[in-house]
Amino acid sequence: MGPPGAGKGTQAQFICREHNIPQISTGDMLRNAIAEGTTLGLRAKAIMERGELVSDDVILELVRERLRQPDCVAGCLFDGFPRTVGQADGMRELDISVDVVVELQISDSLIIRRISGRRVHEASGRVYHIEFNPPKVDNVDDVTWQPLVQRHDDSETVVRARVEVYREQTAPLIEYYKRSGVKYYEIDGEATVNEIRQNISDLLKTADT
Ligand code: AMP
Image (cartoon, rainbow, N blue to C red; front, side, top):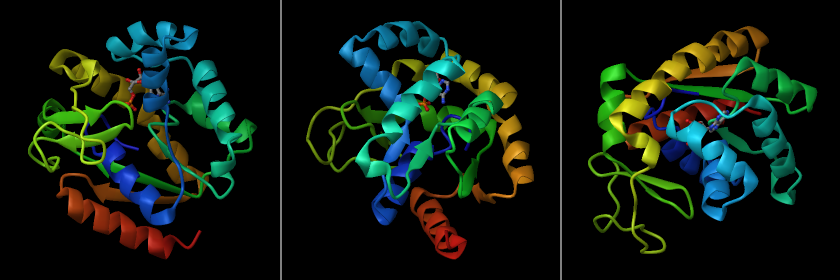
């Protein structure tokens, strides 16, 4: 959990590598659908460009399909899902149980700085930051050497809309999960990438799931 720019995608990659589980990023799945020109992609594109949320039904169906893949048998990490109370309730109905929630906390002022420097490798979803988490070679993905791009919805106006949507529709999940009894960890998302990585790694070792 965390607002845009909190570092969810970056940290998700580390956690998944360390625990050998797949990263299920609904944002990446939607961006892939747009790149492939599917019906879902065409419908989602305008919504995403405005920084609004795609409907719960569509998202839950995407996740349900994805969880059928064999790589999910030992668990997975959700990145950017659930984003509404409706989605969290939908997960329960699908019998998807949550062991741990990690919330990355970051102030509004840092959000814009983080997002304006963010660059992504579109095909894999790998995330970089020109200042805080640079690739080995400027503007090039470390693994494939393909060029990095800036996301369309990373413009300042759209980011402000996304933050608003987060506060209104996603932040209620903080109380939802705290009350539900799952292990809930609040992490200082303003530390460096490596410090955050270490903090999460240490916490997850004690989580004993
Ligand atoms: P993200 O990459 O997680 O920042 O997601 C980018 C955009 O995709 C969001 O601003 C939403 O428009 C859409 N999106 C991603 N995940 C969800 C979700 N779980 N529910 C609704 N919309 C989503």
